[in-house]
Image (cartoon, rainbow, N blue to C red; front, side):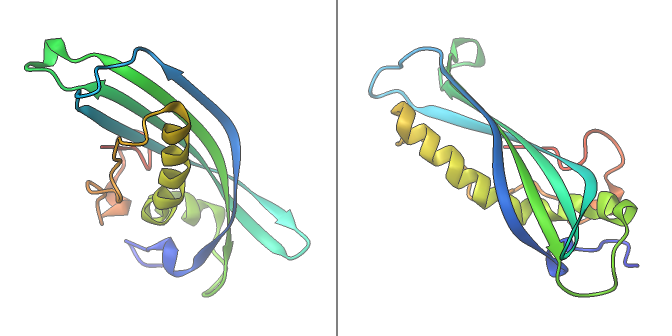
Length: 161
C-alpha cells in the first residue's frame, strides 16, 4: 500500500447528507465593511456500513465558518456571523484492491480536496440566505498537505482558512 495514497483515485462520493446546520448573525456591519471569512474543516472517518451493493466508507465533515470585519488592528475586528455545518459523506470504492477501514482512516484527509468544494457550495447558499452573499470563501484547501500520512498530530483532516 502506498505511503501517501490519494483516496480520490479509488473512491467516489456517493452522497452527502446534511446532519446539522446552525447559523447565527452576531451583528450587521456597515455596508462598506470588509468581511473576512475563516473556514475550519474537520473530517472524521466512521465505521463502514455494509450495504447490499458492497461496503461504504463514511466521513463526518464538521465545518465552521466565521465571518469577521477587518479592522485597523486585530483588537478592532468584530464577529459578524458563524455557520456550523455537519454532514455525512458516503464513499464507495470503484477501483483497486478492497481497502480496509484502517487504511481508509490513515489516508482519509486526501479526500478533503474532493469534498470541500461540495461543502463550500452549501456554505455559500447559507450565506446568501443570511444576506451575506457578497462574502467570498476559499475555493480550495490552499494549506492542504500532500504528505497525508505524516499528519499524526491534531485532528485528521483539520484545515483552517
